[in-house]
Structures are given as structure tokens and as C-alpha cells.
Picture 1 (cartoon, rainbow over the protein chains, first blue to last red):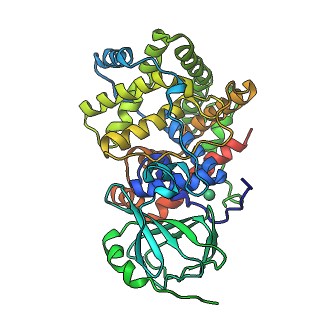
Picture 2: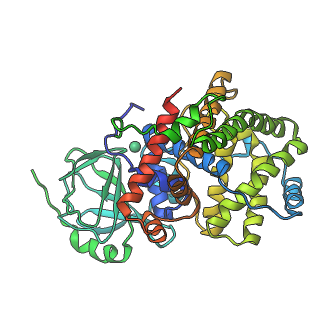
Picture 3: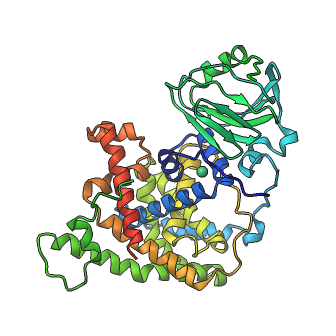
Amino acid sequence: MTTMKITHHLTDDLILGYSAGTLTEAVNLIVASHISLCDECRAAVESYDAVGGAVIETADTVAVSDDCLDGALALIRKSPATGATSEKKRRNDPVLPAPLLDYVGGSLDDVKWRSVGMGVKQAILKTSPEATARLLFIPAGTAIPDHGHNGMELTLVLKGAFQDEDGRFARGDIEIASEDMHHTPIADLSEDCICLAVTDAPLQFRGLLPRLVQPFVKI
Amino acid sequence: MLGSIDILDADHSAAVAPRDTTCDAKGQSAARTRRVTEKTREDSAEWVERIVRIRDNKDEAAFVEVFGHFAPRVKAFLMRSGADAALAEECVQEVLATVWNKAALFDPSRASVATWIFTIARNKKIDALRKQRRPEPEDLPWGPESEPDQAEIIGLQQESEKLGAAIAALPEKQRDLIQKAYFGDLSHSEIAEQTGLPLGTIKSRIRLALDRLRHAMDQR
Ligand SMILES: [Zn+2]
């Protein structure tokens, strides 16, 4: 695989939240997917994890009960003798990074797309309900007309590219749109675009999307 | 960034002051910092050695030592994240059993033992307290090295010790907010509510604290 130039990265807030374990499942999923493609943010997460380790080392402690250790020893004695070899080998896919393959349950071919009109397809991934993760397939040259957001919207490009008021987003790039942002993303003409989109206001978005999506070729 | 701001205040300099520094107004803080620095200096390598003994020899004595040190820390972490004492202890047992079972996966050239255990406890928190899966990133294409380089291990472990000392040397308010961010399962706005501090102050304080830490790490 050729090295790619990722120009749109995670924010410090998202990296801290991922490391601390305070994000919702859908947001964790898009962060894990971006990190799978981006060494820079992976390194950032590892340094935040290091802060977490140092915090746990320097903070207060709470004594455990007398039989806590015995319980742990009992657990390790009854767990089957395993080594690193028992770690399951994760699959590879040229488009979907491993965390997404886990959620799709196979490869890109196993994605259960549903048409939302005008050639655009989506597949909602099963996560906890506070936020929604969906794969989007946007045909080359198609635009999603100007829309606002009810909450936060994160978009990670997996294949192809799109362009909007904030710049051009290609494989590995993540766009972080807040509540007050309005934009008109347009997929590149040369290639169909596949994205992972995470929204924390799923109900409004679910109803609106089919009406919003229209064919629109800019050039 | 904040490169132009002098973030090495007196309190912070104390962390790198030589042992025989005369005790001044900051003396108490400096003494505490030195204690942490010296303690972690021996500990870091020792904890790695104990995990290796667990990995290679299934050494229960080494496990008991790891448990003794980390179980009360993991319990505090889980309770501050919202678990009651009983659930926290159950999770502590599972976290430490994971340390035993996955000792072969620990890579001392990438993390300290405390960091590794923190990530296991963090994942357990998501799994047990929030009943959610934790999506993990794809493994690096070149995979874990079978026998990590000794110099890399020493370098990484020394950096971890520095980080611990830097956190211990933070002004209390900053240290407290960093702990809340990791332990309390608090968003920035919830921290704002709890502390009565405006949101911008908290964000910049956390950023400042992390910059201080980065700065401390660069002073090698
Ligand atoms: Zn990145």
C-alpha cells in the first residue's frame, strides 16, 4: 500500500476521550478506524494512554478486600492455558479497516446497503444508541445538498474523496462538523466515495437524510 | 502552541532539581516529587521484570506483587468511574487475570506496565460499566516484534517515569482536572459544572497540563 497523506486529523478532545474511555461506541468506532489509517493520531493516542498510566500510578488508591486476591488467583487457575497464539487473526480489506470489518462481520462485500435514493446507499452499524454510525456510499460526482447538523457529525473517508467548504477529504481524512456548520459535500467525479459517518443526533438525521439527498453534479 | 510561554515555573523546576537542593518555600513539593521520581525509577523496570516472569514462568509470586500494587489503583479508577465497591472488585479480579493471561502480548518498548494495565482497566470499564464493545484499531502492519530492542525498552520506561514525575509536579488544580478527565468519566462541561470553572478555562488548563507534560518529556 502506498503511503497516503492524511491532512484532516482527530481533535485533542477526541483523542483524550478515546484514551480515557469516555466516548460513545459509535464515536469510539470512528476514532479506532481513523487510527488504523493514521500513524500520527495513533502515536497521539499512545501518549494519552501513557498519561493515563501515569495518572493511575500517581493517584489515590482504594484498598481491596482480603479475599480479592484469592478470587483473582482462582480466575487465573481456571482459565485455559493460552498464549499469544490464541489471539484471533483479524481480517484484511483494502477499504474497511479492521474495526469496521468487526462491525460489518466480513468484508466490504458483506455490507448490507440500503438505498436512500439517487444512488446513495447507507448501512447503519449496530452500536449503542447514544450515537449512530453508518457507512455511506456516494456515487462519483454526487452532492449531498447544503445541510446543517443537529449535533456533531464525524465523517471518515474510506474510498474516493469529497470536497466541501472546509477542503478536500480523501482516504483517512476525518471531517469534524459541529452543530453550527453548514456544508455541501460533493464526491469526486473520478471515483465513488465510501465514508463512515457518525452523528450524535441520530433520530432527526435518520428521517431527514432520504429527503436531503439529491443528484447534483457540480461541474 | 505554547512554546513561547514559560511553563517551567518554580514548582515544575523542582521536579528536575538535584537531590541536595536546599529546602525553600517549594521544598515540600520538591521532596514529594523526588520521592515519586526515585520510587518510579526502580519500579518501572521491576514491573516489566515481573510481567516477564509471569509470561515465561507462570510465576504466581510475581503475580501477587503485581496484584498488590495495581489492584488498589484499578479499584480506585473503577470506583471513580462510577462502579460500586462490589462491582469494582469483580472487575479488578478480571483485569488482573487478563494481565496474567495476556502477559505475552505486553510490549515494554511501547508501554510501561502501568500504562498497559490502565488500557486493560479502561476497556473493562467500557465493557462492564457501560455494556459496550470497545473498537480496537487495526494492528500495525509490521506487527509486534518478537524480541523488542533493549535500548528501546529502557528509553520508553524512562520516559514513563518522567511522565509520572511531571504529573506529580503539576499544580494541584491541573493534576485534579487531568485525573477527572481519565477517572471521572466526565465531559469537559461536566467538569465545568463540578468545579464551577468556565469551560474555556478547563480546556486550556488540560491543554496546558498536557503541554507541561510534553515539555517535561522533551527535557531529556
Ligand atoms: Zn490522524
